[in-house]
Length: 246
Image 1 (cartoon, rainbow, N blue to C red):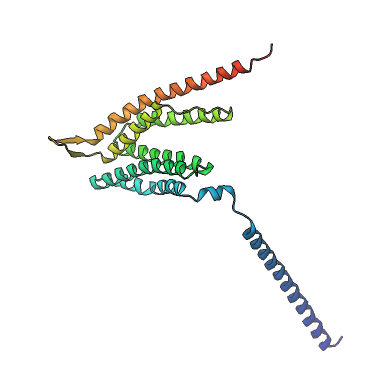
Image 2 (cartoon, rainbow, N blue to C red; image 1 turned 120 degrees about the vertical axis):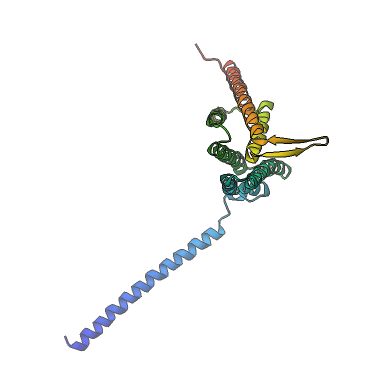
């Protein structure tokens, strides 16, 4: 075989390799185009559709402000403490607003039912943990409050699995109100004058917050006992409706 023949064959092999690489790249590109077209033609999932509404955006905003709230409580000076209290109060207000809007706009969704209590628990837990770190409340108070939440959440899960819905009573709302106002007072912490119509009082907001959280512990466990009692009563009613065969 002459040198020219070898050179021609080498060029042919190189050309064939280049053609194979080009065909491989074209196939990959076609697959990408098909995937993009398939994704473009596919409707968004139900969860994605439910996510994009005003109440859920307010809930997401409550979660996103938690780092700023924690930072302000970490600085712990009087001005930062007031700002932290304002942020927590704003989060509590938006919790009421997004629930109202969800019902008014008829956009009560599965995503919202999951995210709303999650946002509440995240910011409340962050606040309580920071108050313990700053020495504004005793650790045992926070342990009791968080333990109660875990117990009741577990009971709600069991009840839901059994097809039972246990409505929250008035005592649960009282507990939430005491806890929220108590945390706001603990965030303020310092002694500030309170101007009344007839006089001016110097209020220790840390003392006010402590008293309110102590009360919230008592009301929390009272509401938990009532919740357990309602759960057991519903179980008893169910067992009467479905007696076991002898």
